[in-house]
Image (cartoon, rainbow, N blue to C red; front, side):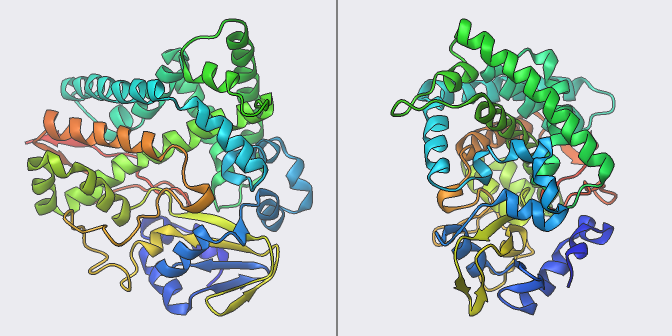
Length: 401
């Protein structure tokens, strides 16, 4: 097994045979000096909660791009993202960002999720050639985020395009020179856009999420412009592409298990469990990374300080040691004694997990009620994005029976 196995066409189309191979190879598989992978649920779970391991964007960048790359704009920005920080900086910044998610903001988010889901469903129903990804799952998160940030909806496509380029920083795949150039240009453009927005909100604050983030204070600390840009961008990247993919992947899993789809549509009360099982079966975030903060032993393997471990959530969710019939979708599966790892764990548990869950419940609930006879017409000819870390389909064409 080598790192390139995670970035070829066979893997993008169906990663699960490689995951089976990874789990069979051992609890922690060494790919090269200082670089490991794991796909066993028990090891993945423990690493996510192990304080001896943390995030290390610089270590990951140096391992994949060389030492000089850490000064590229895309990687400089990533150093300020919550997703890549360790305590005490992570603790300070997370507290500040959390202050922005007030009960009022959460209620605004819930209402926006339902309102926009129904508006997009109206357009789907009226369309001659509807595509769930293009017409619903793709615009939904961007419009919701723009609404709660009080950003013009007409800016949503531009922000989505730029954040898509920038999101490459979160992927396992190594960018080529052209992709790196585009990512750098997009980050600089986003920095200009949001810096101007922050200044406008400082002069004239409102009741939106941007104003809350600009004003957030904890023990005299506030966020710098660099931290604000990085974490607003993180909301767009982590909150958009992952949500689009969860909606699409859930529909793929359900339509590939039609008896489960019928049960899900006819039992709205079990929607939260349906979403949990869909996220287990075909998770949007396939992997994340941890860096050893000290020398440590993991599942009998000695790992040195600074070593990088890629933990494969998608593999852990299909581990037969943890889940009976792991390749089968079972929407009545019990999660009483097992955690779904799609939102990570420990100090780096996803800050937006509650927001994402609200969005997905609104999206699937709306589709089940408004388009109960919907079927996917290209289910046997899906095109998966060429991404290792974030898994999703490019298109889901639909018809109504």
